[in-house]
Length: 156
Image (cartoon, rainbow, N blue to C red):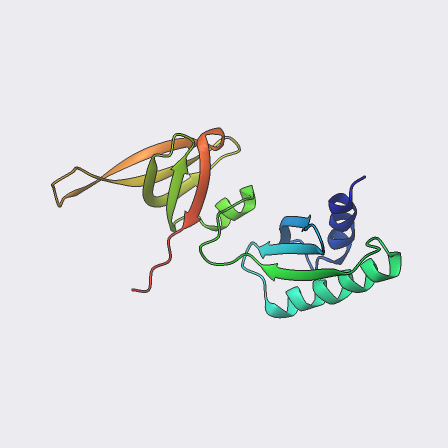
Protein backbone atom coordinates (compact mmCIF):
# COMPACT_ATOMS: atom_id res chain seq x y z
CA UNK A 1 0.00 0.00 0.00
CA UNK A 2 1.39 3.38 -1.02
CA UNK A 3 1.71 6.48 1.12
CA UNK A 4 -1.38 8.20 -0.35
CA UNK A 5 -3.52 5.12 0.36
CA UNK A 6 -2.23 4.98 3.96
CA UNK A 7 -2.98 8.68 4.43
CA UNK A 8 -6.46 8.17 2.96
CA UNK A 9 -7.17 5.41 5.51
CA UNK A 10 -6.15 7.78 8.31
CA UNK A 11 -8.23 10.67 6.95
CA UNK A 12 -11.31 8.45 6.58
CA UNK A 13 -11.09 7.60 10.29
CA UNK A 14 -11.19 11.29 11.19
CA UNK A 15 -13.92 12.59 8.86
CA UNK A 16 -16.43 14.31 11.20
CA UNK A 17 -19.61 12.93 9.59
CA UNK A 18 -20.98 11.26 6.47
CA UNK A 19 -21.68 14.58 4.74
CA UNK A 20 -17.95 15.40 4.52
CA UNK A 21 -15.83 13.57 1.95
CA UNK A 22 -12.31 13.49 0.53
CA UNK A 23 -11.89 15.19 -2.85
CA UNK A 24 -8.23 14.33 -3.27
CA UNK A 25 -5.03 13.51 -1.46
CA UNK A 26 -1.64 14.35 -2.90
CA UNK A 27 1.84 13.58 -1.60
CA UNK A 28 4.49 14.97 -3.87
CA UNK A 29 7.70 16.92 -3.99
CA UNK A 30 11.32 16.25 -4.75
CA UNK A 31 13.32 17.80 -1.90
CA UNK A 32 10.53 18.24 0.62
CA UNK A 33 7.34 16.21 0.50
CA UNK A 34 4.10 18.17 0.49
CA UNK A 35 0.97 16.37 1.69
CA UNK A 36 -2.28 18.00 0.54
CA UNK A 37 -5.73 16.83 1.63
CA UNK A 38 -8.76 18.47 0.03
CA UNK A 39 -12.18 17.99 1.66
CA UNK A 40 -15.69 18.94 0.62
CA UNK A 41 -19.15 18.35 1.99
CA UNK A 42 -22.63 17.81 0.65
CA UNK A 43 -23.52 21.13 2.25
CA UNK A 44 -20.01 22.54 2.31
CA UNK A 45 -17.32 22.02 4.91
CA UNK A 46 -16.66 24.34 7.84
CA UNK A 47 -13.31 25.70 8.99
CA UNK A 48 -13.88 23.86 12.27
CA UNK A 49 -14.24 20.54 10.42
CA UNK A 50 -11.09 21.20 8.37
CA UNK A 51 -9.19 22.17 11.54
CA UNK A 52 -10.34 19.04 13.37
CA UNK A 53 -9.29 16.74 10.51
CA UNK A 54 -5.96 18.57 10.20
CA UNK A 55 -5.13 18.19 13.90
CA UNK A 56 -6.16 14.56 14.14
CA UNK A 57 -4.54 13.41 10.90
CA UNK A 58 -1.35 15.40 11.54
CA UNK A 59 -1.02 13.89 15.01
CA UNK A 60 -1.57 10.36 13.69
CA UNK A 61 0.91 10.82 10.83
CA UNK A 62 3.54 11.86 13.37
CA UNK A 63 2.68 9.02 15.79
CA UNK A 64 2.89 6.38 13.04
CA UNK A 65 6.03 7.96 11.57
CA UNK A 66 4.78 7.28 8.04
CA UNK A 67 6.95 10.08 6.64
CA UNK A 68 10.56 9.90 7.78
CA UNK A 69 11.86 13.20 6.36
CA UNK A 70 10.59 16.75 6.84
CA UNK A 71 7.32 17.48 5.08
CA UNK A 72 4.64 20.12 4.81
CA UNK A 73 1.06 19.22 5.54
CA UNK A 74 -2.12 21.02 4.51
CA UNK A 75 -5.80 20.21 4.90
CA UNK A 76 -8.14 22.50 3.00
CA UNK A 77 -11.64 22.70 1.60
CA UNK A 78 -12.36 22.56 -2.12
CA UNK A 79 -11.97 26.11 -3.36
CA UNK A 80 -14.23 28.22 -5.52
CA UNK A 81 -13.21 27.83 -9.14
CA UNK A 82 -11.50 24.50 -8.57
CA UNK A 83 -12.55 21.75 -10.98
CA UNK A 84 -15.14 19.27 -9.74
CA UNK A 85 -13.42 15.95 -9.14
CA UNK A 86 -15.92 13.74 -7.36
CA UNK A 87 -19.39 12.55 -8.37
CA UNK A 88 -20.74 13.94 -5.07
CA UNK A 89 -19.46 17.39 -6.03
CA UNK A 90 -21.53 17.30 -9.21
CA UNK A 91 -24.66 16.33 -7.25
CA UNK A 92 -24.00 19.11 -4.73
CA UNK A 93 -23.87 21.65 -7.56
CA UNK A 94 -27.11 20.76 -9.37
CA UNK A 95 -28.92 23.96 -10.45
CA UNK A 96 -25.67 25.97 -10.48
CA UNK A 97 -24.02 27.40 -13.56
CA UNK A 98 -21.00 25.36 -14.70
CA UNK A 99 -18.35 25.53 -17.39
CA UNK A 100 -17.63 22.13 -18.94
CA UNK A 101 -14.55 21.50 -21.04
CA UNK A 102 -14.85 18.33 -23.07
CA UNK A 103 -11.99 16.03 -24.04
CA UNK A 104 -11.87 17.64 -27.50
CA UNK A 105 -11.44 21.07 -25.82
CA UNK A 106 -14.94 22.34 -26.74
CA UNK A 107 -16.44 24.36 -23.89
CA UNK A 108 -20.01 24.83 -22.78
CA UNK A 109 -21.48 27.03 -20.07
CA UNK A 110 -24.90 26.29 -18.65
CA UNK A 111 -27.01 25.24 -15.71
CA UNK A 112 -26.28 21.78 -14.32
CA UNK A 113 -29.67 20.06 -14.46
CA UNK A 114 -29.01 16.47 -13.41
CA UNK A 115 -26.31 13.91 -12.68
CA UNK A 116 -26.34 10.15 -13.26
CA UNK A 117 -23.61 7.58 -12.74
CA UNK A 118 -22.57 7.94 -16.39
CA UNK A 119 -23.26 11.56 -17.40
CA UNK A 120 -24.38 15.07 -16.57
CA UNK A 121 -27.14 17.09 -18.23
CA UNK A 122 -26.74 20.82 -18.66
CA UNK A 123 -28.86 23.55 -20.22
CA UNK A 124 -26.03 24.87 -22.39
CA UNK A 125 -26.00 28.50 -23.47
CA UNK A 126 -25.34 28.42 -27.22
CA UNK A 127 -24.52 31.75 -28.86
CA UNK A 128 -24.13 31.99 -32.61
CA UNK A 129 -21.21 34.08 -33.80
CA UNK A 130 -22.19 37.64 -34.53
CA UNK A 131 -25.58 37.34 -32.80
CA UNK A 132 -26.61 38.54 -29.36
CA UNK A 133 -29.37 36.00 -28.77
CA UNK A 134 -28.45 33.01 -26.62
CA UNK A 135 -30.21 29.72 -27.26
CA UNK A 136 -30.57 27.18 -24.46
CA UNK A 137 -29.94 23.60 -25.54
CA UNK A 138 -30.16 20.60 -23.23
CA UNK A 139 -27.00 18.52 -23.53
CA UNK A 140 -26.06 15.20 -22.00
CA UNK A 141 -22.30 14.91 -21.55
CA UNK A 142 -20.80 11.56 -20.48
CA UNK A 143 -18.24 11.72 -17.67
CA UNK A 144 -15.85 9.88 -20.02
CA UNK A 145 -15.96 12.94 -22.31
CA UNK A 146 -15.40 15.57 -19.59
CA UNK A 147 -11.94 17.02 -19.18
CA UNK A 148 -12.91 19.55 -16.48
CA UNK A 149 -16.01 21.08 -14.93
CA UNK A 150 -15.91 24.27 -12.90
CA UNK A 151 -18.69 26.08 -11.09
CA UNK A 152 -19.15 29.57 -12.51
CA UNK A 153 -19.24 32.05 -9.64
CA UNK A 154 -21.74 34.89 -9.97
CA UNK A 155 -21.58 38.03 -7.88
CA UNK A 156 -24.97 39.36 -9.02
